[in-house]
Length: 436
Image (cartoon, rainbow, N blue to C red; front, side, top):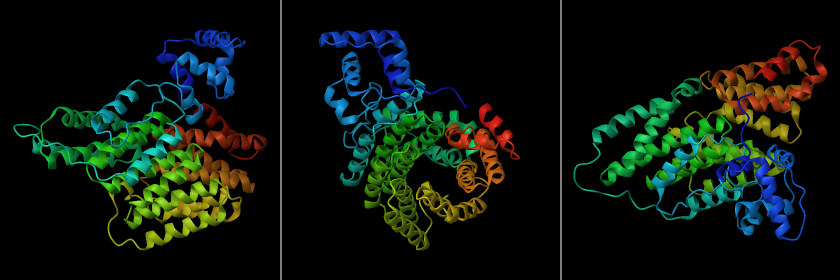
């Protein structure tokens, strides 16, 4: 797998210029100020940065070292209260351009993290989107300013980048980021009328949403959240409700991927309030079904699956661009994944296999994820050789497109093959997983 990602505690230490040894000493001093003892060592800090959660007492001491309000520790929970994990700008702050710039700045710091922003902060963002009045139109400034012809060129060119297949987009990321910086710079420093401002905010939202997906695929979950939050704000300034719903769908998918179904359900319920397009509603219902399955609510999950199928069947007009890729193949595979979550592996396999067969060739990343689902279902069914073949194909695709989250997905269930190393294809798969 690619480079080890930083834990938020390591990021917080870096922001404060502390080594693991320095932090351990700071914790011991914080305990002495409370007339207590804490035998914290560099090794203990390392254990926390590898995933173990410190108890409430140690969290209070760590908060003291970083000068964090104890109320934030309780409200946000570990590790979301740590410095460097700040919540996004509220949608009604009027600081859209600041948020767009800040998202890019944070990503350039290269402090990649397996943790996204606090679930409560993301749900609050969705609540704002669902309840706030429309944003005021972009500023209008008279005189020479942004050339509408240049905006025309950006609008023609940007979709060529955001609409690329995953493998091609991997090589185009520097161009995407350059376009993003250009558009944000025009918004920040240019002079433009209301119509041109709306076009620029639409471009910023589209580019930011795509870059957020790139960051998500590379497990930089915090940067993905900041890009999506800023893009949600920009879509609101542009009056693009459909894209806003799509960004909330992305945030909910990330939450599901990270094993947080509760916040995903809340976000999706809020997104459905203002989403009218049938295809978009279908996708939101499908995501909600996945989250409900993870929570073990079979009845509600099946209602959401039915709603997803019904909505897609009623679609009569072209969908918004953010979900133009969506099809019955996605419903089939995610329905199968729901069945796996609910313990009904047999029917799940048929659903997933059908969806994989129906998926267009251009969607390599999705195919990798779907094949991994298929491999996991086959492994549970005891079809080891078939499972190993599907997992190996998924791994090859994931490595081809550089999607480390897909590689990690396969690595998470690969230990299940350890007891079957004499079965054809298993040894080859395990060697490939270790080398990934």
